[in-house]
Image 1 (tube, rainbow, N blue to C red):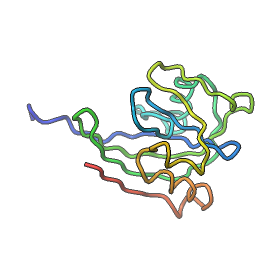
Image 2: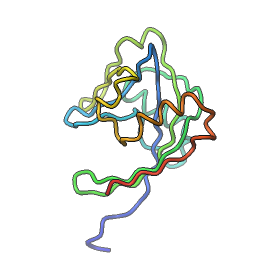
Image 3: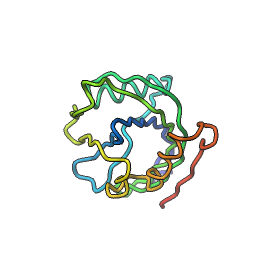
Length: 152
């Protein structure tokens, strides 16, 4: 296993925050794509506490988790490294005073409010997310629990 990349499945928690017909997305400043905000679930951490921790670290504001929306599998290659992840997606809210501008606390990212009807213009990754967000928000979570994506 000397020359093989260490293999692991990452558990990621992501959030969907919609306000005024716009959704909050994260953008890596050197990236050509956007994605749902969130991050890794640490060993022994619940997914809800992981989402609250990650977004507090990244945005500096507390959130309120509303409900579980769905789950998706994602496989991709980044900087020559293969990533395999299971993503758990929750709807969340932030206080009204924070909704106008969300400032990133980490230098490599920024947050954008994107109109729901313009998601495809922002290269949201994985690419099925714009379609799934509408389904997740309209339907009970159990109807849309799992999506699989493989882009390697």
